[in-house]
Amino acid sequence: MVTLRLPETVEARLNHLAAATGRTKSFYIREALMKHLDEMEDIYLSERTLERIRSGKEKVLTSDEVEKLLAVEH
Image (cartoon, rainbow, N blue to C red; front, side):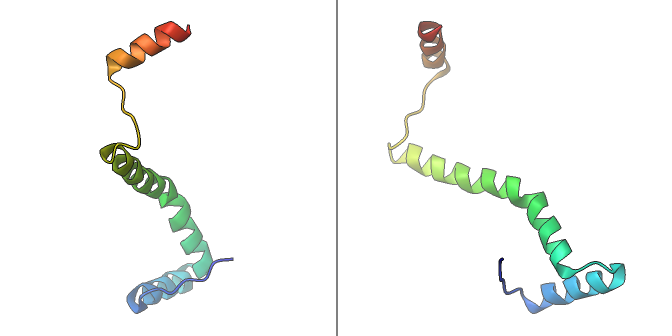
């Protein structure tokens, strides 16, 4: 269960869409979330990874280093 507060303009648009189509507001909120969740995960998790790289907390390998590492493991 999630509770959220929407700006009045968004709420009005959502009410209009729901009334015009006979679907619930929850249906459209769920659809929007499902459509954009992958994109949001990619963006926000990538930003956190970039912060760790810049701060030196996460190592980055060159393609040569990866090739050597894979050759050793095989």
